Image (cartoon, rainbow, N blue to C red; front, top):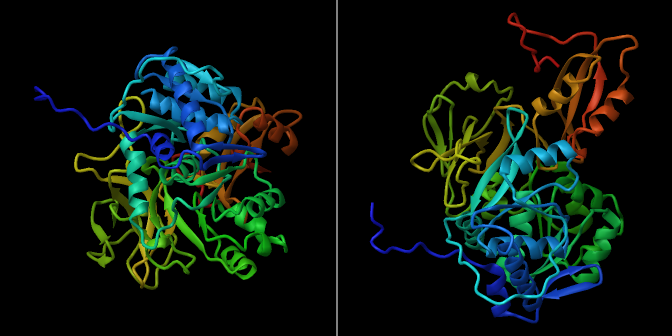
Length: 489
């Protein structure tokens, strides 16, 4: 079909826009280093030229960097160059890193920012609909899958958040960037928000409670973008109240926040924590208490402006949409062990919006349906106020500080041990990380492996956040067809 000369809208360049608005304003602070928006823009252009000289349009470029200025320079440089950024956890084992690099087809791996002079010539202008980022998120097969996020999807989430009143973030804010940039929450909600608003970001490469409080106080941080473990750690420090006195907004996402932890933080600081919910595949924010009741914990709030959300059974019956009750149906097929005394029965969260991904790499499989709807696999219900409460997951995903961990991946590692007869992994509640993986292992051989041996074995094959606690058992409960009954574990 001819395109009649239509040209797709160009992608936004938030760093260039920020540099044009306030060139001398601090963009990033890392230790004693302060980088202005003008300086960052120049370094991003240099990185973009460096990437262009070594790659072709659409090539994937892997990033193995922490929360550093180098990451920001290289990441935004890759986007400006019209290539695709693949941020990876620097703590990955060689096997995990090798799989993601191979699966993405990355032609370039960056472990430090390119320090090259800015060459001449123009840079390509990526289109809004071009692929910008591949973010690897664990799949049910036990191997991560690359979620395909376009420039438009990343920008759409900022537009949606920007329509909240009163605003959650703005150009005068100083934002703590402690959530890892290889995670969608740290990458777009953290670093992306700083660039979108031309705010100032304070980089934290490795979170430590007392040290981060010192940074917050020294740099006048007004917004913390955090996970439950961070707020729990701060609430244990008596001096945190004073250090956080200048805080305007505390945001928590990536994993459920215990209501008791929220109450302790509020008692210590006088600040309420805004709760958000989202997924890598949604760039990532879908709902927040910022659009419902900002003082309410135990809820994930309501959908962002521009996000359509409904609850439905797996059979397709719609239960709730935008706060209004609809048809009710028996949800036994969802295998939920939950009783809801008020509001709407629980159903699967299904969403539609311009912030959704384009499917999984490389063929776009598993993405939104032809009408734009995508089933998240998460279960929620609407309470009596019309606010959403997250309940469970249809599958077996374990959320460790917001990082996806699937039992199949850990079971694959344990099953490969020569003296393990069987293994099953389940998620258990954890007050600091939300959940933790717990492995029930049937040992064999003479001598059989002990817990310490198995933990060391896993540590060389799994990233730290995936490491399970281990329990040795004589047998595993199984169904008549031999399937392990994990609910009994």
